[in-house]
Amino acid sequence: MSIRDTSAQDRSVAPPSGVRRQRTRLIAIGAGAAGLALATWLALGWSAGARSVDAERLRIAEVTRGDLVRDIRADGRVIAANSPTLYAIAGGTVTLNVVAGDVVKQGQALAEIDSPELRSLLAQEQASLASFEAEASRAGLDAQIARSQARKALEQAEIDRTAAVRDLERNQRAFDGGAVAQIDVARAQDQLKKAELGLAQARREYQLQGQGAGLDTRNKRLLADRQRAVVTEVQRQVDALTLRAPFDGQVGQVQVAQRSNVADDAPILSVVDLSRFEVEIRVPESFARDLAIGMPAQLASGSGKPFPGEVSAVSPEVVNGEVTARLRFTDKQPPGLRQNQRLSARITLDTRENVLQVERGSFVDQGGGRSAYVMDGNVAIRRPVRLGVSSLGSIEVLEGLQPGDRVVVSGADQFGDAERIRVSGAP
Image (tube, rainbow, N blue to C red; front, side, top):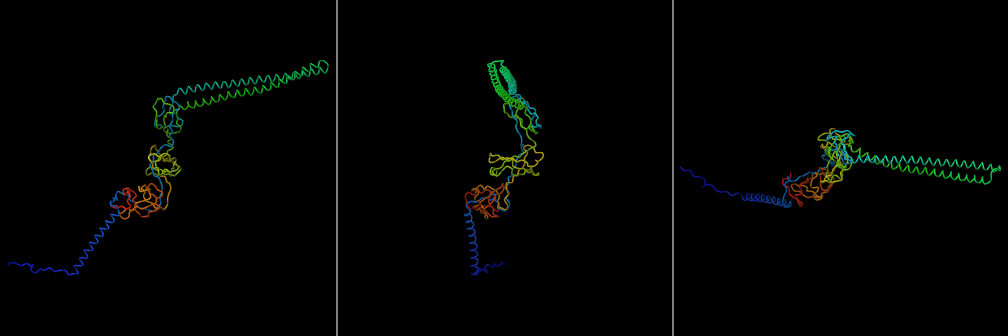
């Protein structure tokens, strides 16, 4: 016996007209919302440019407010503050008494130069000095003899005058007694005048002879003194043939071989003062203009205790965009320092309190530092800014930004000249 299905009993039931209109309205609203979202997405994409940049290729930093410490941090190496090089005073054969690394004391003979020419010159100058001294002595002796002879002539003239006076007196008494004639008295008077003239002449010659002899002796002595100065200088050069340590220290680099011939002014070796060290650093050219001799610094080795120091020298030469500076320890230097040891240095330039600042990046150099890209959601918008002083890690913001703004500090060179650009994957 077969069972019939219920298809004959089924019939379709149409929904009420009100329900159909509500369903149609909901479908239309959903389609309109989807279209509006699509249009908004397209509008944002068009306004942000036809291309987008991945956020991973950018560095974004937040604007904050705080103290901006302008400092310079650099790694330096320890160098000897005093490490002179000793040079050959004359050409000759070098005999070395030390090798590189030897500890030496002040005045110790380090090397000797055999210079026959310089030693021969010293002997010649010493012989000339002996000759000049002999001539000066002879001139002094001649002056004494001349003065003695002039003195003798003066004394003889004085005796002649005395005799003439006595002869005149005798003739005058004889004439008064009628013993002699008037002519004898006149002759005696003439003899007295002659004796007085001779006495006056002898006195003048004595004075002139003394002056002339003194001048000649003085000239001879000056020539001898001049030659003595020449001998002293040549003797100094001969003594300098023995190179001596200028202070307690250590022999640095030896630049000649044993028993080699060297030319005049050739470098022989260097001596390092182990008691005084400085730290040499290199800083960017942009910070070099702010460095000044005497600025305080801190020097440290790794995580060790920092030691106070100061800037002792700043090179005026720029090499590869960097300037070399030297720092010295103002107090005691760390024990156990060695040549070329690495130390970290920190030089504080100044501190700006409670200022707006942002991380320093390449955006400072782009557009002359007058604009920056600020994030607005996932869109970077170029905004005019005014920047101030900078440190190695941060830069002061004077106008155009507020605390909390997120700035593209690096990678904005990919934006070209776009005013707005979309950043995909931006947080």
